[in-house]
Length: 266
Image (cartoon, rainbow, N blue to C red; front, side, top):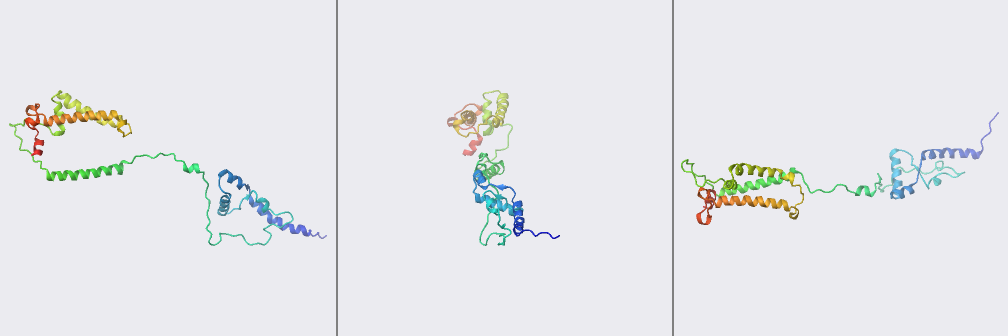
């Protein structure tokens, strides 16, 4: 018994259905590019380019787009576009056309907001140490020039039978020597210098005011002024106003009894 031949219409529709099946299977989920464009604030054309570029990179089919599904699907009784002989798909851009690829989309607030505040600080090395080294070289050159033009001869050999009167310390110790005329040696030579050195060491831990304006540092400036003026007055008195026996004298009447200063003036 011979089988009946299928109708001509069914035979013509079979290739079209077979050709349309891969397109529908490869389409996957439908993307609503209009909704994504309104949500992220990105133009629809950029989203389409990104979708096509991702499909080419991964080697997958391009997802279907809402609004284009009906146009892409063949109507009833028509052949699918794949069954109709047409030009092959273009694998690359036309000559002279430069393509761009959309990597990602970032909201403006995520890249414009800054959380780190600028700091007016620098590292100790090399910024601070370089400046201090240059200052050291400048001071060394200045002292070398002073030693070449200013004479500082040594005194004669010490004679134990003839002691200088008055016997004064170097100028940077004359303030402490002047204190010996007012206080006990234990206080003037031990307690007060020790207290001064400890106070200098504790200054960075006590004074934490970052301001450099004088109006914001009245207490610190007042304390520094008192100690600076006190040490200056003691040094000046010990240099100019102390004569034989370390007694009080007037330098403009009795003379200057300070060997280092007399040598410099001569």
